[in-house]
Length: 382
Image 1 (cartoon, rainbow, N blue to C red):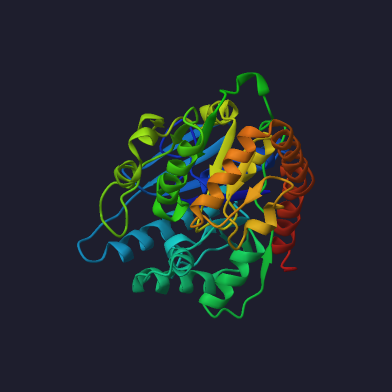
Image 2: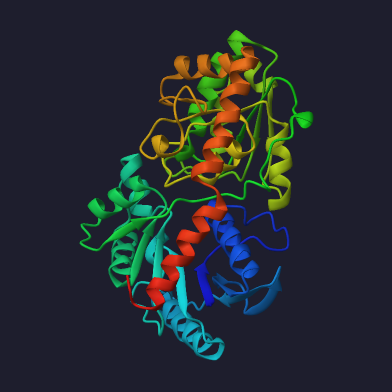
């Protein structure tokens, strides 16, 4: 099978700017396809130049942004569509997949089936955050979804919400995100005692500003706990300023002394840093099905997450860790402290967390579902 992924991000050459969940997902799926002897192409759109790279057996096409004042949305799409159809013909590509974010494939017509996988559209995230979505983003996202030959959601929650938000009458199947449980495994020897880690984008929707308020209460109960952030800072959509700066401004004096920040690191180093944390905090307000949760759980980390939407599809509160409303700062802080103080409970929960990932989010199991779906779509059986 020759398969191609259309995306704006992909992890290659250990570049630090490409460690997002979608990039991780596509990379993991690509590796598994290669192991079975299939050929994988990546089409990276809106790049600064045209370039062809081969990395780990994957053929990557960096495709330059074609801009024209006032019409870039059109000229870039037309150029990309023509470029891709030529490669499809030359390389005998049989199927395409892309995320729904901002509806990049709206108005495009391809010579092979197009799958759109729901990792969370701008419209979806705006709905969860109760903020206004840009008209053009919703328009393009809906048009792209309507034109897709098939739609896959990475959780039941994102599938149901997307169907309702866009009033779609198309069938959406759910195939969960997955993780390589052999690669993401525990290493207790590396743990730094009393370390609390958040990793991911530094953004309001990830619950980052709530972490400041939660950590202030954690520090009141135990001044030895240190908080570590790993991820890219993001401009806040409400204030227009750095989310990291806003976060620091919310910290108490003592909490600020115990806070440490590390910017985005190469994809291969993320795992090492997760291993060092004693407890993980992931209080997100808006996700589809977060890879960060799967990674932390697979590595047997004691974890406290949010309890919103998709959460109960991954976490079992009180068994695989704790779930909590991120706005309930005192309650959330108590759960964090509980995991630090009760080592036996933390170990019991973290082991159950890994078992849950191995049984339900194992890359090997989920990959088979994806592969079978691709074959059915190519045979026009979907």
